[in-house]
Length: 439
Ligand code: ATP
Ligand code: MG
Ligand code: MG
Ligand code: MG
Image 1 (cartoon, rainbow, N blue to C red):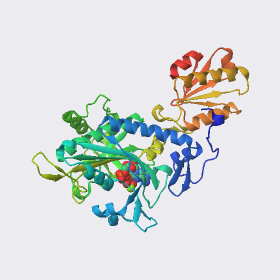
Image 2: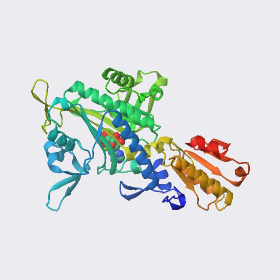
Image 3: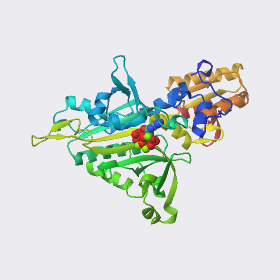
Image 4: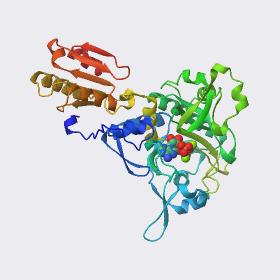
């Protein structure tokens, strides 16, 4: 992409309305724009990051055996009356009437709808286990929408729903998602810790929130420091191996980790002092086993091996991709701007032509740009007539992991300068070596 043909509305001033760093940086970097309280338009740069996050989420859901579909945002109130949640959900639900005065709503979540889809088609235990997911916009009329995408009213969610014959099967389905989540967040450069979460009236211990530590997080969390050093399962992990999965989950739940709602101060204090970590955290994912809570009232039943009908055991598994855009920035930035982990960066490389209009720097920049594009590398070519200082500031602000500086001085020696945004390190290299590094 040539910056001269792109749409990147950078703000030089820090917007006053933004209270936390990710919100400020996203506005300054021209990633998004507020259209109403808690409702945002993704601008091109922001959309690129969101799409990269979605791709990682999707790959890991698919690897774990979940199957993608797409449910609508607008739902009928009827379904929610069946589960009893239409009245229970309260003011967070955006209720709508269509022209025939039928009660509709903008979905805050999809348990009812997926249960309706399931019961329409699945009759036998032989069709289980099944896990269906989608990545779709949700609306929750939050009391306090704030911090930009962190707590929006309209936000993107990946929500998966598992169906099993019994609790043991559901446990395995839960473990698959648990492990998929560990991998998903690690691939985004995040350290997410699974913390025991409230299960409501169902009880049991099958609910975990995946939390990233950040001083601006809205949750207060307590955990064992060793979680930060745990290894995440590799992509070769066998999701069908019940025991292997269970032992991974056992390891990741062996140490103390809880949000304030579930905090057990006495247990926490028993940890060695140096291992106690109390911090603020951001909830980026949440997994939940809820048994027959929806299948019973909505009559989602299958015939078991013994010929009798049983309500299926279900779980739901959420991730917030739009919140993740902000959470990754909270975890990875400096005074100059965002430092995107390569896996989610809007562009991998920025070419900074330090003397636009100069025959030699123009030709060298164009050549590298074409070569990177031919190799399928996401590259942004800063081809505007601006001072070098301003180009450095833009590239740092928008957080491109690799910057290639092409100026007359280096060119005289046949070299480009390659800068790594993560640590600021710089190297003079031949054009061929730069290309070899970046493909
Ligand atoms: P929170 O505690 O932050 O209100 P939640 O527990 O209500 O979140 P869930 O119902 O568990 O959220 O939804 C699954 C995921 O969707 C969350 O883990 C989070 O990543 C994301 N999410 C929830 N609410 C919002 C929101 N208002 N804005 C952006 N993302 C959200
Ligand atoms: Mg909430
Ligand atoms: Mg929560
Ligand atoms: Mg939650």
